[in-house]
Length: 430
Image 1 (cartoon, rainbow, N blue to C red):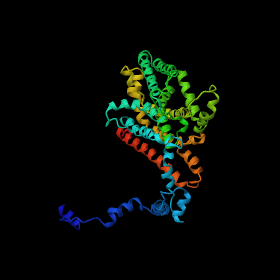
Image 2: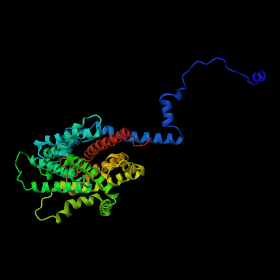
Image 3: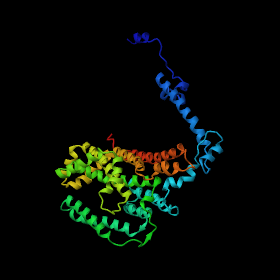
Image 4: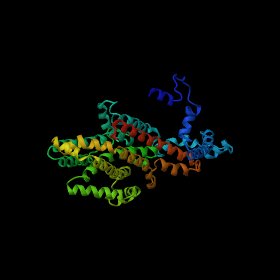
């Protein structure tokens, strides 16, 4: 049998071959290009077309940036300096950058106040975004930051933000007393107590007491206005969205249908319509002589708009949870607020992170719509005072590119943080 096997095999190697390098086409950059760029004829054609397109764009953009003029008093001077060569007139950014950031009416001597509020914003949100890095004691400053930022940006008496803060404290004290009996009684009792406290303190004469220079809302503009609207509306719309999502799933029919009607109505109306309501129509329903701050009206409308969308996103997260999670809360003897706070909402919010971030990014970009109701945000400043001036009439690409860059930095940062948070929480259930 063994002889038969030996005669059936013509050759058997009994020594190992020395190791050699793989062929040049199967390693390094050549292999990467063959695998990723020229894996087939169609991919090769698309790669060559993409290279031609990118070259065409860069051949026009790079000289335009490198030959750009950064120091000139007007577009006419820019053109004289360029002498017919290709180049951007970036001097409009160096001359008008304070107006683009703060608006053209905000007092120059107190630019440091909104700048300081912007820097403190990073300190305030740090313990929320990176809870494992920063100590929990910093959350105290996070809770105080809205009132500090209001005092820095709007100015006036320091008693105004203090009374606003004490109103929340009064509401929380009433809530903590009544929530043991009923969550609804605690919630509505806290809201009524806070509003009653603010109504009473609104009659107190606080003007001029421990005050700094007051800045009316109509003087604010530029990118600062976009940041104020985006930050405040996103911060407020998330808790309101959670309340609406829970209300829509409530067993109490009145609360359920109030939430359903609110969500469906707001989602069926364009945001620009709500902004016009805040700017024009709402004034007809207010008593004569009422001074309802325009920025506050816009914040209310944008928050309502974003809350409706976030409520639907969170409702999707709640629906994705298996019934066993609700039954787990019941088996542990938890009441409704405890089960929601400890079991249901943490999981639903983790599932809803991509949708919430999507709404937040869209909301931040939609803040530019306030320019249609004569609020001079960044886009409004470009379309209005800057391009209307005789010095810079005709400079479009530089200004709009600068606006696009600012919004891209903020939106890309939000997107990258959400992806990092998803990896930290492992929301994909792998």
